[in-house]
Amino acid sequence: MAKFWYRKTVFNLLIMEFRPSERRISRELRVDRIKHYDIASLPPFPEGWYFIGSRRAILKEKLVQKTWMGEKIIAWCDDAGRICVAESTCPHLGSELGPSAGGQIRAGCLVCPFHGYEYDITGTCVATPYAPPPKSTRLRVFETRVMDDLVFAWWGSGGRPPQWGLPGDPPMGADWDEIGYRTMQFPGHPQETTENSVDIAHLRYIHGYDSVHPVGSVSVDGPHLKSCFDFKRTRVIAGIKTIFDVSAIAHVYGFGFSYVEIREHSIGMDSRLWVFATPVDDKHLEMVLASQMRKLRKPKRFMAGLRFLPPGWRTKAMNQIILSTQKRDVLQDVTIWGQKRYRPRPRLCQADGEIGKYRRYCEQFYPKHQIGHQDGRGSESSERSNLDTSAQVLDEQQQLS
Ligand code: FES
Ligand SMILES: [Fe+2]
Image (cartoon, rainbow, N blue to C red; front, side, top):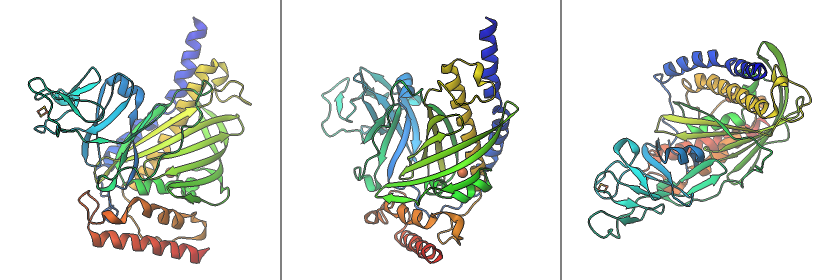
């Protein structure tokens, strides 16, 4: 019993290490919400795959509702375990379909609270309480992709179908612990937040990383951008100074999906971090951090009080520490993002990383055939000037190197 109490206390101490500052930063975050954010020159809803939620959470809640791209959507799971992501407005007479209005799932179908029309996961109306289902009544559904516990949907400019896919599932297996999550909302644009994955200089300056250096150059293959870098990091955890020696490989697939493979050398620890940025409306983002660790069975060295925890708890505690550290980093960025202005022609120095290459990569997520289309992407002239200036940034960058 005493052993159990001791372990629980160590676990709580490790977790609590991060709580006070998160509360403090959360207060700052609320202040940030009311500050001005100039993203007017970037179309607000770039094309791509965006995170919907945890499959576990959808199964548990049965019907989930959220706002993305300025509109409400719902997600549910049918009896065969297939996920559906759909608009949250009934095609019959426009009722809200989410749980807040009384929408519910019955035998795997979504039931509208207004007249009881039922929809299957393809969006087909399969029954009504008083007449045969009208053939033309269809719910708008989004293409989905499920990756272990992660559920995504495709946002196509002007409603067009997926133009590219997300990578295959990373190797999961019993070796990997379950995914942990942190969610934040703040003013921002996904192109700006994703830019941080190539902005090596800010890692040192704002987050206090040491010995940051890129490994090779940033590579781009269609929607896949890859950036590798090493760094060291000193953190005080449970009162003990700890140095982490890290190699990271970041894979970016559009602005809604970033995946970082992380190898920590001094402990011998493997983890993966996903960063999902999803536009809520034309000014705000939801950012979800998802972290997963390979089970820490035989660490090369022990950190803080982790030695005394059983391996299962040790891995969970470590994952919570990683999530809290990453969230703290994001909140440091939020303070900048919340007040910065988008610079289509940034004045760069040679040590700024490959921001010019990144800006060129970004252009594909604003398909030209949708210029001026009514999907919240701004006018034709502002779009053109945005694309032109991105190209100019690349030219400037090439001149520098
Ligand atoms: S509005 Fe949904 S069934 Fe009538
Ligand atoms: Fe950052």
